Image (cartoon, rainbow, N blue to C red; front, top):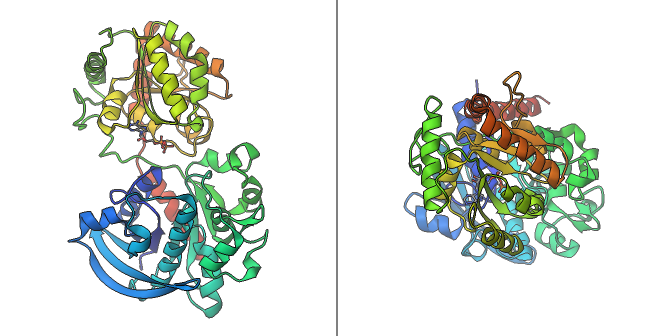
Length: 484
Ligand code: ADP
């Protein structure tokens, strides 16, 4: 049987270049797909940081010039194998030699316009790979299905290839002026319509991805339904409703080697399902010591690890934070982001010196230690396409308390003390006091019913957060597409 060939097109991929969850997904999914018998490869820009770090492993494949508007631009193609996956890189130092992956918004539109055209130009003979499925991710690759339709298929190229478009974050859509995009993309005017790539009169890459791809996916089943509603749709809910027949939700998994309390070298004490009580107690004590908090083993330690942005429900927490801190509890926040929120939490720490700490920084080591130390993990998101933090917290026996939206709704099941089923706490409405009252109930359970609490921790720690199930769901989608 021939292997299904998939090419992932992405602006970031761990470990080469990462700013967010997209890099994690594209960093793990290809090897998972290959383990299940596919031939999945990845193509991305050759950013300066990749060139510097991997110069010795990179193999030059070819160079050419690409016409972008009036300019002729150099486009190089390099390749490299890394941990069993074949990677391709588009080289152009004019566009990709910057210090960071993303630069200035309108310049990024030009950089990724070039990237998308360069990918299609390299497809097939130059890279010696003819994918059955081209799998594009987020706005930076949203125009690819449209460009295929405009530049290649009418001439008989790639007519059997299918396209999948995955939305990781609906908020960033890649919007620019009509004239600029017509120039950068060399697009006939028939695409510049409300039925084509225009949204509110201007080209929108994400809309183009939704309209012209064969299948659209997003990163959880609940979010895949929520985005049909104006509240979650970021202005594209109407478009998504029109194409609802091709929208699917597939949950992300975790990298279980990175997030494993049994082997985690950042922890004070490693622990597994048999000795979590001892292990978590040791990590909690070490964290209290490091934070100069009172060493009280039986007081619930509430934790939060997050980008400090409104999406994460930070306003709900700030609304009831003083009331929360009056409870017999401790609270440690690890986060960075919006300056307003950072200051609010710094000030709150001053008001609650005895039991609250605000760590306004990004620290991977500390995040590991805090997941392990905490008893309750707060994640009251306003919207959450998938969310990894709640899954990590469960794996570390830190019970999540979430707002039931998107991926949080799909992964956190409210605990039922009678049946012993469930792995966390969940409230439905964006309401600060609903969150606070549920938190008070959770703390009551923690103090008064250790047996039920331990069951809750056990349920979380033994959950399946692997990529295997999700990889299989992607394979089923590819199969369905290729049979159509
Ligand atoms: P999002 O991608 O929307 O930020 P996720 O829950 O999917 O949310 O993933 C967030 C990831 O970033 C988690 O791995 C979390 O541990 C990590 N993280 C967030 N803030 C920090 C921080 N200040 N320090 C260390 N890690 C953080």
